[in-house]
Length: 103
Image 1 (cartoon, rainbow, N blue to C red):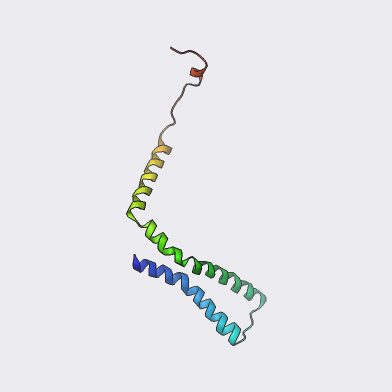
Image 2 (spheres, helix red, strand yellow; image 1 turned 45 degrees about the horizontal axis):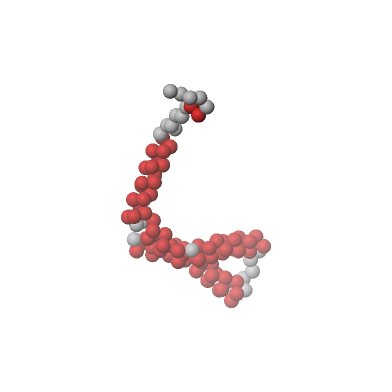
C-alpha cells in the first residue's frame, strides 16, 4: 500500500514540477515567449496540474479508507442489499381494502 501511495504522489506531483521548471527556466530566465494559443494551453494545463498537486495530501486518507477491511465489508453489504432490493418484486397491496370492509 505504501508503494501505491508513493506512486500516486509521484504521478500527481511530477507534472506540476515539470511545468513549474518550464515556467521558471523557460519563461522567466530565458524570456521565451509563447504565442497566444500556447499561453492558453499552458495556463489550462498548469491549472489542472495545480489541482492534482493540491489534492495530494488527501490521497493518503482515500487510500487508507477505501482499502480498509471495514469499508470493504460495508460496501459489500450495501451492494448485496441494493441488488436484493432492486431485484425483488414490490409488495402487492390491495388498494381497495382501505375503502371497503373486507372480511
